[in-house]
Length: 486
Ligand SMILES: [Zn+2]
Image 1 (tube, rainbow, N blue to C red):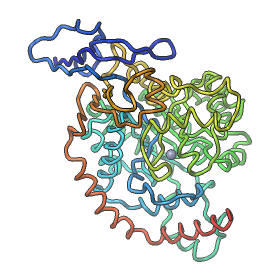
Image 2: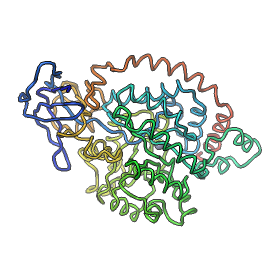
Image 3: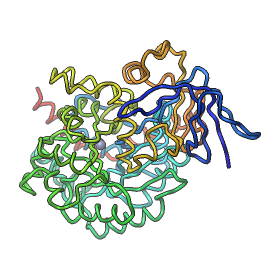
Image 4: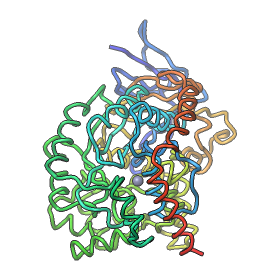
């Protein structure tokens, strides 16, 4: 049995719905927090690893409940793009990627997250029709990093009505011919998708205790009822969650009205599938009735405040959802729609956006609520409530040690407030996931992070030369959307 003791640290512990700090020793055995004892009291045997906790705030790792590793090479490659242009640009960037590029892309995503205190992620992957062999390099990359990851297998069996380029450019021959040649959004049959999910679950779910596999509708409105029910049934059968994008844009709500005569959350309730298993990225265009249903069923919206703002899709009614008792989690979304994978930014935005909007002051989320969204509620999104997301005996040891001497944490007046408003990740010194030290003083256990960056630089050139047909569609969309905006 391997044992690690974090000796005499300042621990950020759960207290009711919030947090408290206490001087403590944290004992980790076989990947689990075995005990939290008074500082200096934990008994060490020979061979135990001791980590000095002096001048360290020890907190639960952050959970990025919505990310897309495919777009790590696309940071800084497009600003002021509308949703349709941006998603087609993503396709041009990521269509037909070789395995080594997928591996480096996922490594880069994980490297950025770990250094900024993220210990678990839901990665909604890929953006094209999923095959098990496309999952292999991503699962391998996260396992190699030692990062806890849920891979949501991105599936759909309807056309992408909300991203139809003919609605913006018009259906001229050039566009139709281009789409006939390369259309990454071709629907697949439900049986084929179900077989792929089963194969991928059998191959990767539970790998090294770190990797989980969820069925993950690309967007609930891009799926027939059969596919939504199939996703739910597979999740029930294997005790998994289901991840999806949900009513991120106004047009997606209109698509649901067209197919279902009602918004998608209400439709899912009618289908009998709405439950705590679902985590739903964005949930921007949801009304009061839908919020009531989300609360009743304890489904988990994943708020992505930076992405929402950057591509101007609208503002999620997070204060209302929290007030109704909906467990809202937090995500960064992909780096093409956000620019980073930093959950501190997401926490700050989550508390500031309602204040900027000037809505009811009583409903403003405070720092502890943002921290709860990024920890305990993230655990709910991963269907790991009580297993990760808090420093408590019996939970997996996903732990971050922050340096209390940095300008943003010294002096420490209030841990939750300073983590949410001051910290950006610069105080992260040690990251432990499932009891293993994966990052310490800038060094990653897996190997050389700079070398991964060098590989990404080389690969980006090849990537930009790969899908000229899709880049041409994207350029036309950007031109058309720009004209409409001006
Ligand atoms: Zn997304």
